[in-house]
Image (cartoon, rainbow, N blue to C red; front, side):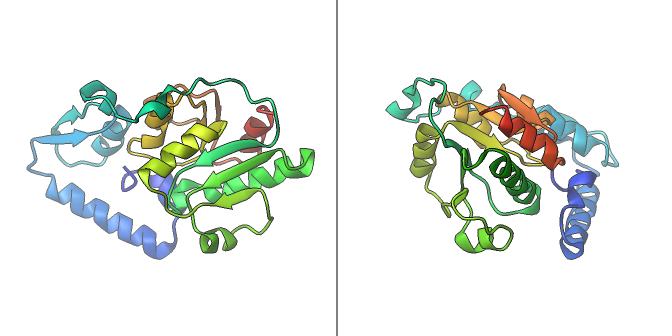
Length: 219
């Protein structure tokens, strides 16, 4: 989906944008004689179909809960209750790519801190080096590095919200997984989010002010 989202491509460097454009061209040419394309979501289908030279049939793959149960063990039985103490713990499991929108998310956290103090803490799956390249305020963002699946499930269990400011996803697996842990979602106001979950808060992911306002509403 990233290849076909022309707005999101602008988040990348010129060199990476060129790579994505060439990959998009290759995909379009390679699918001229394809009869059927498998997609994960309806929004992905719409995004791709606008750029194709042909009119193939699209088949949407079933989500995992529609095809086979996700075996998460007993941790999936978490009973959610509203947080009663600060700081609230947010979890963002995502790689450090531009469309994951870490920079705007961290700016929003800064604004919350400047208004109310250290009432939020964000756990994210990036390295310390990646974090230091765009953010320097200590104690607000915790870089966890790459986690195993069981470790990701642990953070679903201990955190108060799944925070998902990504600009583009083909599916957004953490959004689906969060439901199994009764973990409320604060996420981008984009189609891929609504196709995967029912968020408790949404925001314009391109606006630091909108992200800030959404985070403040949690406090």
